[in-house]
Image (tube, rainbow, N blue to C red):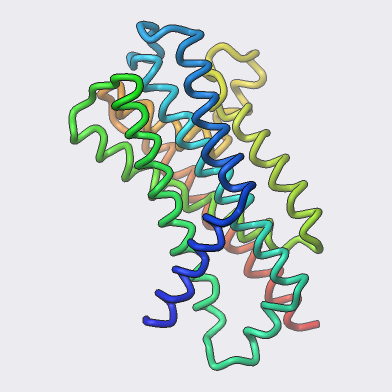
Length: 246
């Protein structure tokens, strides 16, 4: 357990030292939030939720999805290229500890992003929600991001850090657009809406948007997110086992 905690702490420190982390996971979501929440207007409502609260959830998700794919995925690919993962295999440290530390460290980073974004929404934009709603939204986003952490690990299995970065870019930006994080899915063309309903970012966002509007989280959304989590884990496990067998 002590080793896991130390490894997780190292992951957090390395992430916080990364310029790309602050650009994609902090600066961009915060900037987009202030720009688009002000442009559309604070009094606008989407799906029964105030726009400034609705879009806060969207940009919080955008920040932690970007972090889970870039900070986690690209770093794993870099460590593989440098031989770090091969070195871990000949140490007494169980291989699972390496990935558990990655997941634990990334989860704490995501928690920090959620708290930061919520504080900005509350004190900079004056969003007033019941404490239970804040807690429910935060917990839902924090737990619901697990499929994206699994996707980050999968992206980390790319042949090079460069290809991992490309995949992370495509996945992050594509899911943000098609999943309704940049703009509500309802205003997109019909065919994009049909695609978006199966995108994990939409299902995770839908849960947070529903909570802000005083509605329940969709069971369909939970099932779809769980399916993505299992699929990404299975594919990652297959690739890693196949690589070890070579």
